[in-house]
Image 1 (cartoon, rainbow, N blue to C red):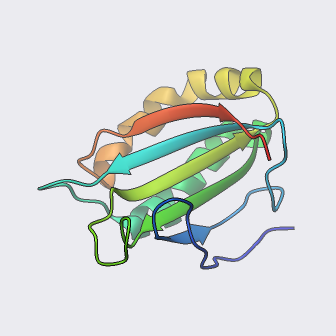
Image 2: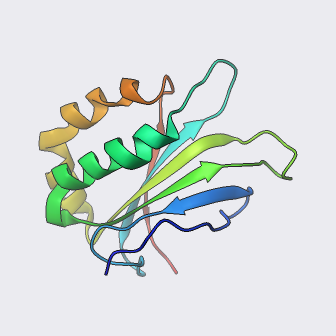
Length: 133
């Protein structure tokens, strides 16, 4: 079942999370999570509306059934709500296996990366992880 946009708190920094799923509503232990972080800084811009309503749905369409879930966090504070956000946004892509990510992303990487200038001037930081809990 698809979930609607909802507010939640993001881990070590206070963030407003705008969560949206593709085919399942939760991540599970053992899944592969690709985290795409957009660091904040002077002169950096980020269009959350474009990212959440156009870019990530496009990514989901291009990755197809291999993508099990995606989520989006919107930064609203740092260590405290008054501190600057370390990341303007963080996106998460969930897969059952690393090979599913590799096999689905490779053929469409150019289209996905080519869309980045439409919503930000930030070079994203990427991390691939295994969900532990």
